[in-house]
Length: 308
Image 1 (cartoon, one colour):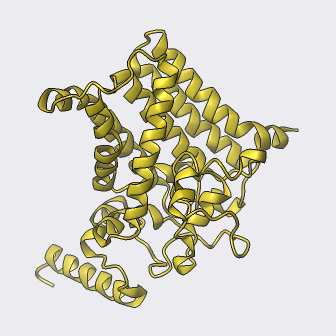
Image 2 (spheres, one colour; image 1 turned 60 degrees about the horizontal axis):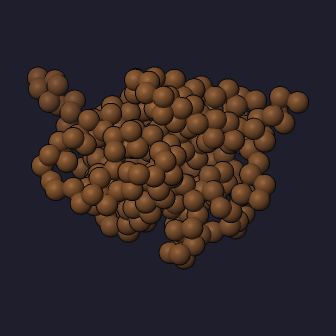
């Protein structure tokens, strides 16, 4: 019975229940600090549901990445908060075009923000798989060897800053109010947790319209270029327009199919992942990467122990 509740109730509770709770808090004038409750609730719910009904039980095991992913989540949310705090600065420094429909009910303003941000973030995600500079940053997200709730918040800080600039700055310049930006930030965070959660949930008729579940699992497979699909964050409409929507994998996805094919031994340490784009060159191959890694480690040891 519990597994059935998770299978059919996980997504509605996360996307409607927790976002709805956050919306009510903002609508009734509560401090934005209270939004920590639905955010932490999303992470806790995903963690519990992953134990009850996992896609792959192996993805629940620590792959030597747990502490690193916690740091990613902390930095991710701090940058989100900083992004919201910068909105008045952006408005002060740059002209607002007063295009935002502030007369609309708050719920419709939030939905509009989600749709517009979904387009901007999807296209940036698409470019992040095609432009070497962006891919070197975005590869930190794809280096994960498993998918679970925390993976959604694994981002290189610089790539997240670009996400924030591309995804929200145009909306701010249109005149988006801060309360809408706050709820958009919550919706994105909850969506990322759901998108990467290791939960075997069912979507029924919404399967090919929401960019979560197996659709996003296909995006993370380490099968060469086969994961070059399903870039959407919220809805699949933009992938369908880009011609990058893929409904089914060519073969069943297993617990060992995540990561980057040319870098099977991706760095596990947070600092190593932050500096990873400085050393990684797309197409360099596993052997070259391992060789250069050893050279860097030997150089670091020599610097620490110059007398040896």
